[in-house]
Length: 210
Image (cartoon, rainbow, N blue to C red; front, side, top):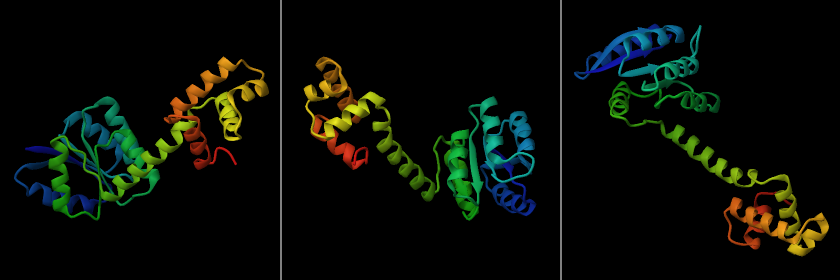
């Protein structure tokens, strides 16, 4: 039997969803909470298998409650069930430690399925949430590469883009040729490219140079 704590500040929502879940042969709603503070107390006292967590509540919101629960009990499995899909809710909730993210527009049977899947160790995310995460990861990868460059390396990359040779760069910056070669090697490694040409192309593609 999967023991569930249901947290939502709307009584009618709790009544409806809890009634459906309790009718399932393998799910038992052992407690309900109407705010984050109560959710933290119930979670740490009862140790349910799954916590269904609303996000917008009085006293303490679902993100804060999720964070507090995970800090005290890292093994907790929390499913966010909310009406919100904006970045200010999705990312903080997942970063706080939520395992799954569902919308309140989901059918009760879908929430029950998410409970079973999360209990088995899977992470169930709404398609829109998955899309947001993938886009953020791609954006992070695109920017992270050149953000690793030091100010000196950015300066040298700019000169490379202007067609300067290693010797010309050394002369212009008043540094040793050997030092320039080390910087160029570091630039290629950080940008994950194989030669100067690819580094320059990367620089223009990412608008690092005009």
